Length: 161
Image 1 (tube, rainbow, N blue to C red):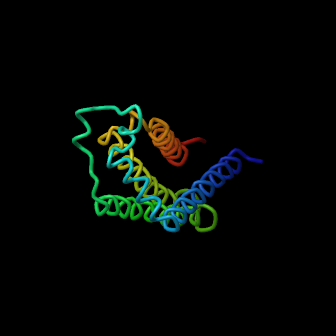
Image 2: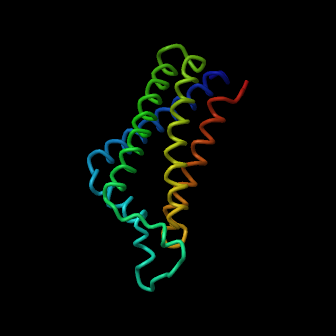
């Protein structure tokens, strides 16, 4: 197997894997929309800080308890996820069937931009609502996904040969 073929194979597996991940994320978020609104609302309302033992923080003034804002936040995230999902699948098609990496790269980069945007939205909103105090697993998950997008950017934009 040539270096070019092995690199294309690895990039293809990675691209399809990420496309499937985004597909599952979108399907789950649409299917369990109410649960997602509740989960986002839990963070935005800063409810974890009220669990025993309660943590009293000046940051609690940032709490947003309106379910309308929780729904709006989820809709915004879903729009970004749908954009990432759509552009990433187009990039996969271009990579696998429609011309190779040069044709796929703009689509993959657009998908990574949308993916990174919704990750930053979740991470920065989480920081705003002090999720680092009681939802540190969620914060670590967002950071790990950010590293994943960064790795994907270098994989698809690096010159490997």
